[in-house]
Image (cartoon, rainbow, N blue to C red; front, side, top):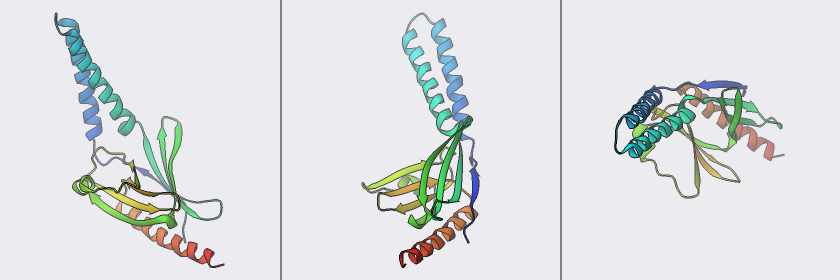
Length: 179
C-alpha cells in the first residue's frame, strides 16, 4: 500500500558553501584592491564583480534552496512524486510526475553522472542540493507528453521505496485501465 510522506533532501557535502565563501572573499579583495591601485582599476573591479556574480549563483542554486521529495496521492488516487523547493518562506513545486511513469531508477556516482549522454528528445531536470555530490539517483520517466531524466540526491532506502511504489503504481494503473 502506498502511503504519503515527505523527505527533506540534505546536501551531502559543503563544496558550495566553501566556494561561496571563497568567491565572496575574492570579490571583496579585488574590489578593495581596485580602490588602492592607480592603474587597471576597471579590470580589477570587473574581476571582483565576476566573483560576486559567481557567489550569488552558488547561493541561489545550492545554499538558499531546500528541496523536498514528496510521495502524495493525486485527485484520482494516482500516486505522484513531487519535488518542492523552499527558498525563505516561499515554496515552489518544481516537478510532479506519476509514479507509474517511472521507467527506471539508477544510482550513479560523480563520474557516471558526467559521462551520461542524454538523447535529444529527453529533458533533464536536476534537483540536487549538493554541488557535485558523490552519489545521486537518475529517475527516467516516460509519459504521453515527454521523456525526462530527473536527478535527485536521496538515501538508498528512499530510492528502493520509490522503486517499489513505482511498480505498485504501474500495477494499479494497469488494473484501472482494464475496466
